[in-house]
Every structure is written in C-alpha cells, then in structure tokens.
Amino acid sequence: MAAHRLFCLAAIVIVALGITRPASGRAAEGEDPLAAELERWSAFLRGHAATDDIWKQIKEGGEPALARAQQAQRDSRRWLALLRFASVRADLAAAAYMGERSARERKETGAFEAEWKRVGTVLRDDLRAPSPSALADVGPAAVRALGEAALPRVRVYYVASLEYGRSTTPDSGLFYLGSAQAERDFAAFARRLSAPTPLKAPPVRGLEAELDALEGELLARYRPPASIDKHGEFITASAAVKEARELDAAGLRYGALLRYLQAVLRAAPLRAAGPSDVAATTSRLGELEARLAEGGVDHSVGRIFLEAAQSDLAEHAADGAAATAAAVATDVLPRYFAALGPEPPRTARSDPRVTVTLVRWPYT
Image 1 (tube, rainbow, N blue to C red):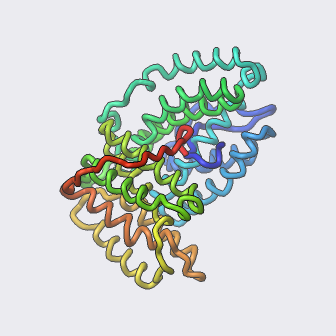
Image 2: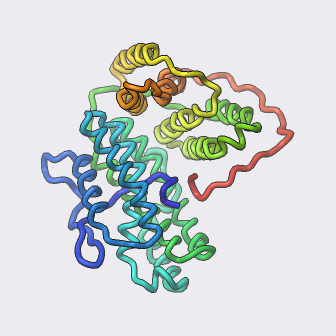
C-alpha cells in the first residue's frame, strides 16, 4: 500500500516504545531546512521499532527513496532532492502518526472512528477547497509547486481514510489519516523553505489543452499488448494526469504544471522508443540548461527535471541506459517550455466509442 504512493514529513526522534515529536520541526538558525529534514527522517528510519506489515512496506520503499534524496542533495541537485523527499515524506510521517496511536485505535472500528472525528476537527480549515493564492507568497516556483500539489491531498486522504478503515482494517485507515496530516505539514514545510529570488515568476497558465492531448495519447496507446504488459505504467501516468487536471481546475497552476510534467515522464516508457543516444541526449540537455538560464525567469520547476536527467546520465554513464534523461531531453522539457507559452488551439473531442475507467486509491 505505502510503496506505490507519494510520501511526506514531521519532526521526529526515537524513544522507548515508539516515537515522540521534537518540540519544533524547524531547522536551527543558519541550518538548511531541507538538509535538516532529510537527516531527521533518516534517523527515524534507522530507529523506528515497529514490526507491523504497514511499517515493513514503508521501510522497504522508504530507505532507498530517502537515500536517493540525500544523494541528490550531496550532488548539489537541490530541486531533485526536494522532489524525492516529497515522495517519501508522507509515508514516513504517516508511520510516525500510527506509532503514536493506541492499540484500541489501531484495532477497533469505534476507536478509529473517534480518532477520525478528532483529526477532522484539527484539520477543519485544511479540508476546505484551497485558494489558488494559498501559496502565492511562497517561492521559488519549485517549492510553490510541491506545496500546491500537497494542498488538495489533505481532504482526499482524510475522506478516503474513513471508508478505507471500515472496509479493510482500522490500522489501514489510520495510515491514510496520517497521510492527510502529512500533506498539511508538507505545505507548511514549503513555507519554511520559501526564500526570495530575484528571478521573475514563470508565466504559468491553464493546461487543459495539454492535459487533453496527453490523455488522448495515453488512450490511443492503451491497446494490447501494451495495455497488458505495461498496465502499471498506464495507471501511474493516468493518475498523474487526473491529479494535474484537478489542480488545474482548482487554479493551483504551479502544482498542475509539476504533475503534468511528471505525467509526461511517466508516460515515456509507453512510447516505442529505441536505444537512447547518450551523446545526443547530453548535447540536447546542455542546450535546454542554457535556455533555462535565459531571461531572468524562475525556471526551478523545469530544473527539477533537468537535474533528474543529469542524475540519470551520471548513474548510467557506463551502460548508457539513461531512459529518463532521454525522455526529459526530447519530451518533458520541450513540453515545459510550450506550457509557458501561448495556449495551443484545442481540437474538437469526438464522442468516445468506448469508455475506459482506471480505478485508483486514492493516488496510484
């Protein structure tokens, strides 16, 4: 359950029997908040003593994911480190929350539902539809994008947690209840990371035309044998498109742009592409990096994917199998720049002859 979703944070140290939160999740004066949180959660992973199946799944996926975030930080790829950290933080925070719950809350439906109501009171303001300007004072753009992407998830996970706990086990419902609080906390963390920049804000706009086009591409490729052999890839790409569409409709344009580009990257394995030309990819990425540096614009959202490509090239320097780098160079970053330009003309959507429904819970 935990290994396939995006993850979050809280400030935690280990003591006997479980965990307790430190007095503050803030970094010490002069300390990098991101580096501090990476180390804090690394300590949590090393010391958390739970033995339940949910924690085993979280730990199995969380250890390598957090290590990759720390490696990106050491490699001075800050935006990639932040993206990777955002992907592991929610599950770790949910595990921390579960570790604080009583045995009754984790096993008895009535006790779980009472806790659900209590958390609903705590999250009351965060369960409302977020304002498009909720993080307007947060920057750079990459920080705002990740924070905006977290905002609607608070309500999604909170609402889902009740029925999930009822239909499976209270323990599983508590996991999603913890995830709701983790997303709220990540938006607050984005505020702590916020820093002024001399760069101009990127000209973000609505992405309905781009999302329609990408969804059309996915549906066109959803044919056997690909729909069978790569079913998981279709699900994750489609889920990212759906989330991007919801963010776009809510006016959370930065979050929508980030999720749209992630959907493009997730759709890359579904294209019939031959072996990548490492030299050509490297050259193209150099051109795109220069373009990202032009015009005095805050292109930190685009730089997330540039850093992902650079990391992929470094990791596959010997075998040349840098599929992520190739996708970023040929598709993701070109679509990023296009998304900042004029809105493309929309093509008429024909009435569907077949409706395909991809079921997710709640983000898969």
